[in-house]
Image 1 (cartoon, rainbow, N blue to C red):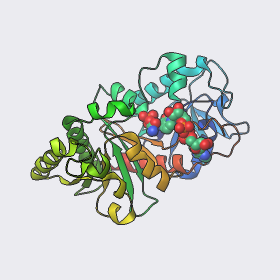
Image 2: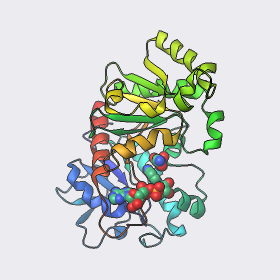
Image 3: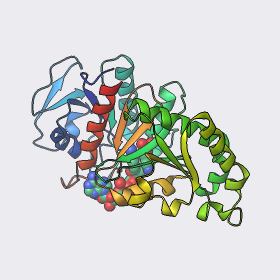
Length: 322
Ligand SMILES: NC(=O)C1=CN([C@@H]2O[C@H](COP(=O)(O)OP(=O)(O)OC[C@H]3O[C@@H](n4cnc5c(N)ncnc54)[C@H](O)[C@@H]3O)[C@@H](O)[C@H]2O)C=CC1
Ligand SMILES: NCC(=O)COP(=O)(O)O
């Protein structure tokens, strides 16, 4: 895998904003190929079909590796007949990566509900599906923004699960695995020689010594101490509500949080328009814009492309480092 290979931009849900973001993403300057159905692109898109990822990319035009879908795309109205093709495009992109034909994958957003209802999709999102396609490897989801300073990088240790399930899933093993994967990825993919990781508590005020919850005193303090003795640069468990202001962010390179909203609310508030979702631990590069399918504005041509542009650039940079 290398940056000299194009990044594959998977189409995602064609009834969402993905198709209109693909031509806008040319502004990234990153060599990429759109994998999807060109009939779903906005009218007037200047695209050209490529039959393989070895072909030279046409400067300034959208290169398309064709994947025909059974139905047209109606903005805002996902078609159940298209659901399986959305899933197949992701699997096809992985196959191209595994064969060394693509530098990595940047995924346009899928609608989880549409895929579950239309094709019985058995995964909560790309992250878990890609981990499965890679051989059920352990992965973590990181959202990263480098357009805010200090940078904001967050990892939810539990991902797409009900809040009531979090205390049972946020275990010592899960946190340790997330720390190890994040540390390794910050070194390999982000070029940080000595990554600093901050760990949030699960409870308000990180439990305040056991008076507002017990997970911190039961096992988190000991786990952090053990891994610190092993050489990891760790801080925590820290109160999550005071981890994200600029002076706090200057003290770490990534924040590991117990659950989805603890991690994603700060980054989407700080930088909704250009945050990037990146899957750490995969044998191939995968990034994504941080937003979803935005059915409420799909087809209007007003979707902001900053996040997909940042995601393509990050995929390109990661591929170059591998
Ligand atoms: N990587 C992925 O495939 C992701 C998929 N999703 C999925 O997307 C679907 C919709 O999720 P929501 O929570 O509604 O979040 P969303 O990000 O689709 O929309 C939230 C709000 O932000 C606006 N918005 C989103 N992206 C925008 C853009 N590029 N430019 C301008 N405005 C934008 C939308 O119009 C909406 O008002 C769900 O099925 C969710 O699971 C959500 C996040 C990531
Ligand atoms: N909330 C983030 C999100 O839904 C991204 O999911 P994924 O499809 O990248 O796993």
